[in-house]
Amino acid sequence: MTAPVIPTGPTGADEPAPVRWGILATGAIATSFAEDLALLPDARITAVASRTEESARRFADRHDIARAYGGWEQLAADPEVDVVYVATPHASHHDATALLLAAGKPVLCEKPLTLNLAEAQRLVALARQRDVFLMEAMWTYLDPTIRRLTRLIADGAIGEVRTVRADFGFVAPAGGSGRLRDPAAGGGALLDVGVYPVAFAQLLLGAPDSVLALGRVAEDGVDDHTGIVLGHPDGAHAVLSCSIVSDSAQRAEIGGTLGRIEIPRDFYRPESFVLHRQGHEPEEFRLPRGPGHGYTHEAAEVMRCLRAGERESPLVPLDGTLAVMSTLDTVRRRIGLRYPGEPV
Image (cartoon, rainbow, N blue to C red; front, side):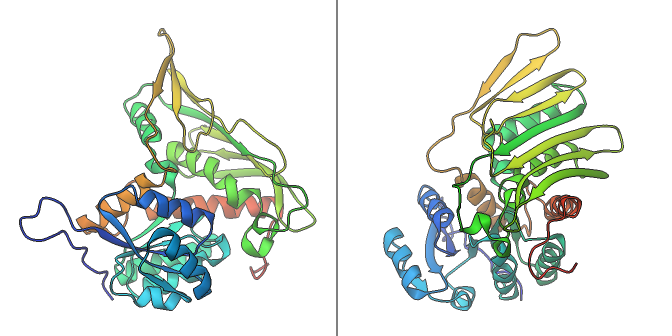
């Protein structure tokens, strides 16, 4: 089945018709995404689905959504939905996205795209076979501050990038029994927050040819904290860390042959960064964050792609998503982390 043609409005109209969104799942991140979609005049949420109709109805009432489904299949079959945002826990990403793609529905799926590379490869193959749009919701790649930073690097502001350092750590509630501590849900530090420093490093350096990692798998079967070194053929490297048992500045530093860039906090969605160039005073770049939770940029990119007839975003390419998943798989092998149901 070929993906639907997204309406662009009546002939002669200045404004395009709104893109009609469906949301699959009703948790906290789905709520934030729905609130951000409300900020985009060319977006409208027309349906929501959950595993229970009661949960879907509560979400629909809260966000003024017309249709609420107590099953994924109904959302996949809804002709009034142009694209679906998948906001389920990690372990459900593959099945939910596969169902939607098979029905011809374009998909924006939360990160990480799946639990492992094999699942991600199946989704990408299905999207390409069905000629349907698919994008991982890696909001960092669409963030205006990060895009400004990458343009400066591309223009040679710090010369050739040789090192990347990034960390993402926080302290999860002690004794928790939710998603973060559930291996069946893909819990742990690596997939929840480690995906950010890995994706950030590969945005700047590309896929590594060597991966070193040390980490601890706790008694509940998830990784508490993990340290990662990514090596590249030209000698460039990235030093990364993630944790759910220790706090960190969540900062990043990019070192080049002519200077460096520092992101002092929240590198995955920063408010500013500082450019240090040899022979120049430090220069701070501060871009207005704007309203919302930060999801408007990825939603806008999805809608741009759909209206242009593109099957993937050049800013979040599927091959890049697969490369990050490959690195995450290698890290898990290095630290001995396996999720239930995966082959030994």
